[in-house]
Amino acid sequence: MKAVVYNGPRDIAVENVPDPTIEQPTDAIVKITSTNICGSDLHMYEGRTSFEPGRIFGHENLGEVVETGSAVQDLHQGDMVAVPFNVACGTCENCNAGLTNYCLTANPDPELAGAAYGFADMGPWSGGQAEYLRVPWADFNALRLPPGARDKEDDYVMLADIWPTGYHATEMAGVAAGDTVVVYGAGPVGLFAAYSSVLKSASKVMVVDRHPDRLALAEKIGAVPIDDSKTDPVQAVLEQTDGKGADRGCECVGYQAHDPQGKEQNNLTLNRLIDSVKFTGGIGVVGVFVPSDPGSPDELGKQGKAAVDYGKFWFKGQHMGTGQCPVKRYNRKLCNLIAANSAQPSFLVSHELPLSKAVEAYQHFDAREHGWTKVVLKPHAQTTS
Ligand SMILES: [Zn+2]
Ligand SMILES: [Zn+2]
Image 1 (cartoon, rainbow, N blue to C red):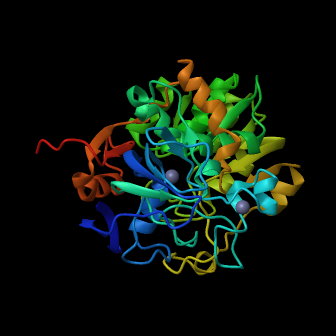
Image 2: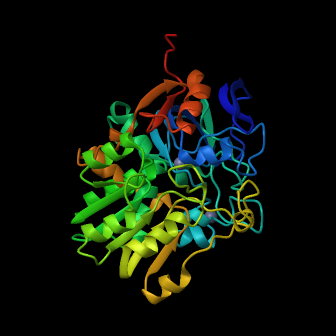
Image 3: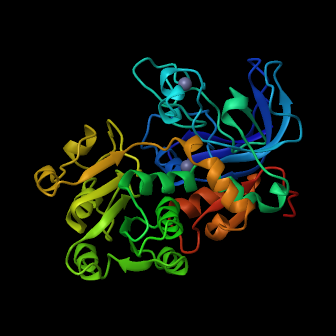
């Protein structure tokens, strides 16, 4: 089959690789019909992780079940499924508690918890930017989609990671009806944190970024756009909230946060959140941070550390939730919203491309080029060019 293979920093290719096969009786093989490029793929693409050359990218996957192992009971050939990016066993202590983001079985490194498809430090699992994907513990992991799923693939594929992850930021921050919310970062996750806040009836949602196309999308879904290349975002949030600060804040940028001139500063959004969220307010951090970052421009960053204004954070009595999203906690309910036409997360999609265009797609997306907000690759689309 064809797949997007990582060969080194900013060096990927669509290559022929062996087809995945059923390796365990609980496996299923999914024919991937929609698979997203994600901002977290870019950390790996840029060589800022330990992702090994030769591996396949892709953790936001949707497709059709084409083969099942002998122990798979609920999935059948022909079922359309959205596959959470978390690979989870379903039976360990953490999975039993609903913490599929920190499965103790799926990551073979005894010092790590949590696994994902095509992801650095998250187990050996191949990614789905490919024609086929092996899904382990398939009954537990795959979400079967309702009838008509093929007509709304660009909506349902957002259930694999990006929408639940944005939603998780709002849950950790504690967003409820009537709250004011500030979201830092209007990439896909940030836009979905804003979208989720709007769906939860927040009274005001503010989104901080500096890319005009992203800010325009934020405005389109009902948020107040704040351009941090033109204004101090903390002051802007205070002005929007009668000087109090937002009730809730979401960090959707991560460790490669940088100023509008491109200078990296990994504590930039964390400290802006502490400054722009009210006393006793909640903060949800889903932007990626890593335990070590040899490519960081500063000494603390290289050690995975960030100079956070902890004194101010404590003094304000704020709380912060962190980490990756347990997709299964939310994906079924969010799926129901799509099926009921109450949500249309495909608003984010800017490009649908065949797998053969993946190399160019990564280049455009990595450069944050205007208009490249979210790419969905279609590995089985008929190529016309
Ligand atoms: Zn993702
Ligand atoms: Zn588990």
